Amino acid sequence: MSKKSEKLSIEESFDYLDEVIEKMEDPDISLEDSFALYEKGMQVLKEASKAVDEVEKKVKLIDEEGNEKEAENINE
Image 1 (cartoon, rainbow, N blue to C red):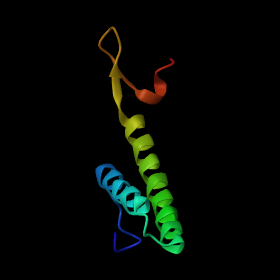
Image 2: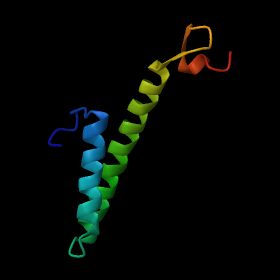
Image 3: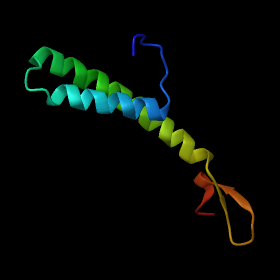
Image 4: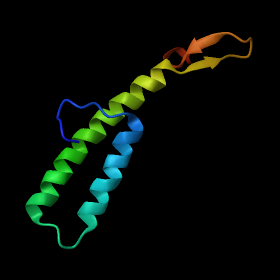
């Protein structure tokens, strides 16, 4: 992630977070680098969480009668 404005897909976000975890598990990582990775990882996680929420809202469900309903209207 070279640019701050770069928008990652959900899959790319999780791949990036896996890389962050691997780097943070390195016993030779400095405390400063660890904090920087943690901060960036939390930003990416927050963005990924928003993206997942948006996808969930778009998911359509088909009720017993074959009618499509938006996921946010399930309780109707």
